[in-house]
Length: 286
Image (cartoon, rainbow, N blue to C red; front, side, top):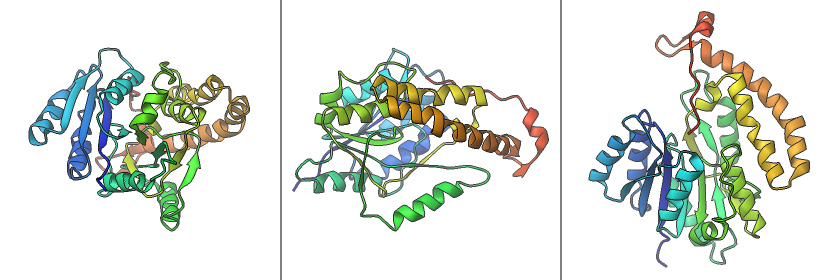
């Protein structure tokens, strides 16, 4: 049986600090990746130049542009242009492990009946001064249960895969709003057409902790997208549960880790309370 073709779509906005490493890791897995589409969403830094340099070394990398600002527009531009039977969507700061593409292709190739419409794995933050202890423990537990693929209602944007026909079926159903979680919305759209989302414990990727470093107000605005997305899909009970039971403890955790992250000096590798008064700029969502 011929292997399924895999396209990887990467929306990008001012990602010159990390996209080089992202592409290098994908290039190391070219045996299982048909093409990589980087969608530049009006970057003002060296993102495009870095991608173009990689494309010279590996022509399977394609740089395309989306003028309409917003992740959903860049995402759609890439997914629409992808030729693979499978379309993975990751972020520019996603660092895939060495066997990621092989595991993705093999999982769907083994699904002869097309039971799964889409799949995702989790992300584990890298470059944290205190380490991602919770993430490491989760990964260790899930590694012991490698064969236990489970069905989930939503997808994780930094590490998700759609069948080509799944994307065609939900293309006109996904929200084009910038105030909702586009990955949660995508996953719910899959379930609403009768598709199933698989969670794969074997394809954990590295993700940058940039969202963890945002201030409380910015983080609160970001997390408010979750209940809003659920309301959009008429999941009113889940939206209420998220607002009342899930978000409050998440805000407490964020406040605690924000103190740790902002007091840490990466140059000296020490914690200094005086660093709390350093001027910081939250990353602007594209």
